[in-house]
Structure formats: C-alpha cells, structure tokens
Amino acid sequence: MMNDEMEQFERRLSRQPLRQVPAAWRAEILAVCRKSRVEGRAQEQFWPSTLVSRLSTILWPHPKAWAGLAAVWIFIFAVNFSIRDKTPVVAEKYSPPSPETVAELRQQQRMFAELIGPRDVRDADRSKSHVPQPRSECVEFLTA
Amino acid sequence: MSRATEIERLYDGHAQPLFAFLLNFTRDESDTRDLLQEIFVKLAREPGLLAGVRDERAFLIRLAHNAAVDLIRRRGTRDRTKENFAAEAISIFAPAGDPDENVFREEMAEALGELPEEQRAVVHLKLWEGLTFEQIAAALDIPPNTAASRYRYGIDKLCDRLRPLYEEMKKAE
Image (tube, rainbow over all chains, first blue to last red; front, side, top):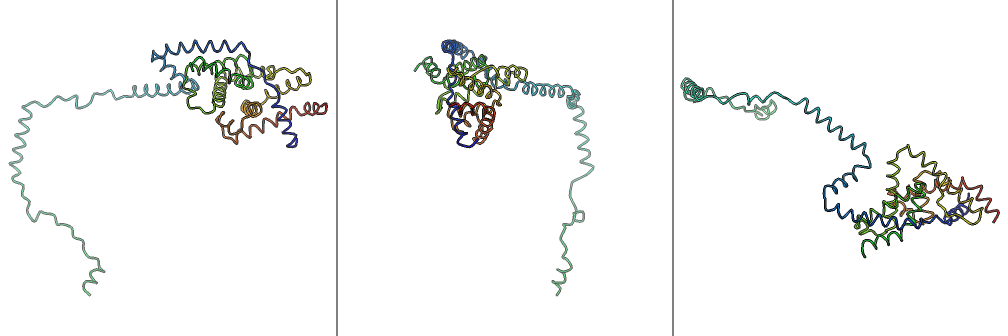
C-alpha cells in the first residue's frame, strides 16, 4: 500500500468504535474499592501485615528466583556450619602458669643475666657502616 | 474532595479507555474486569499514588499494562493456550448496524488478536487513544523508536491481513 492508502487504512481502523465498559461494573468495582479502603485502614494499624504485604509485593514477580536465592543461602549456611572447626582454641586448653613456675622462671632469668654480664659493645665488634665506593670513572675524574 | 468521590471521578474519567486497552491486551473479559478492579482498588488504598502525576491517563495506562503483563506472567504458558483460544472469540469493537461493517470489525478483532501482545498494546494506544510515540513509550516503559517500530510491524500485519476485505469495502463505497 502507498503512504496515502496506509493513512486512510489507519484512519479507518481508528474510527471503529470500541466496546463500552459494562455499566454494572461501576457499582461493583467501587463497592470493592470502598471495602478495601476500610480493610486498608485496619491493616495500617497492624504493621507486620503491612511489612508482609510490602515484601510480597517485592518478591512475587519472580518467586522462583527469590526461592532459589534463599535455597542457595541456606545451602551456604549449612555447609559453613558442617565444616566449622570444632577443635577448641589452643589458648583455652592451657591454664595460667602457677606462681611457683613464675618464680622459677624469674630466677632463671636473673642467673642468665649475671652470666652474660653488662652489655657493652666494643668498637671492634661494631659493624662498619657501609660507605659507597666511587666508581672507576669517578676515580679517574678525581685523580685527573 | 473525599477519597470515595476521588475514586468515582477516576473511574468515570478513565475506566472506559482502560477497559478497552485491557480487553485488547488480555482478550478475556473476566481478566479485564479483575485487572480493572485491581487498578482501582490500588488507587483507593494508596491515594498518594497519583500525587505529582501530570498525565493521569498515561500513568493509569502504565499501571494497567504492568498489571496485565504480571497476570500473563503469573499464568505462564499453560493458560496461554486458553488465551489464544479466547483471542479468536472476543471482540473489542462495538457491534455495527451494517453487516459489512460488522464483518470488517470481526475480522479486525481477530487480526488484532493474532498480533504479539507488545505490538497490540502499541497499536491500540496509537489508533484508539491517539497517543504519540513518546507518550506510548512513557506509558509502556520502552524507547520511542521501539514504540514506533512495533507500531509499524503491527499495522503492516493488520494491513496484510485485512487488505482483501478493506479493498472490497472501498470498491463498494
């Protein structure tokens, strides 16, 4: 069809009158609206139902996807729980050392300090600080 | 204005075009009634829904389209067979006095039923709501170019399907 003919065709289609909405529906639908408004007010006072309805509004378009996601999380928690390290922590096994042990350790420490003597470091034992040596070119330059 | 009066105003102002759009989209009268009720119940429960909305009609068409798409998704493929069956039987047009015109309307209803839903929605909004492609795009949440191409595909299919009858009627006139 040419453009003009196409436009005529479109105009013809658009002129076709559509069916009217059944008159009885008005009273029925408006009655349901009134009823739901009253129920809505009652529900507003009970917040958990509002929360549930909001959640269901979010979740219902893709219930399988959300159920799948929930199942994956449950699986992850189950696996995590089953492979958790059940051995008690090493620190928990040992009780604090007795006062006798502590005293003995201190005595040993003192004896060790006496055997070693005072800590004075001789010059000969000091490590020489590293001084970078001049390169061969630099030496030549300096001697020239 | 009280909430009850506001709902009545919305119903009187928009129920007819929403009914026609939903009937054309779902091809089922009881689904259309359920969806229409769902929309107005939503409006009654959430009076703030239309606050700040510039174009009520476009907003309500969008609500209707989303509700119809959700209904079809909820049903899945099982009931699509039923829908397709209904598509052959339902007519969205008012019956005509002239028998030839009546035949044309029946053929047109059937041809519309054969279009994919997304093309049918665009064709309906363009032809019977007189919306621009920008308005259709906003209502259906699609780019304007997509709206235009869907319309072109849809109208071409209708033209191919109705051409013999259309030309016959033109000759008779």
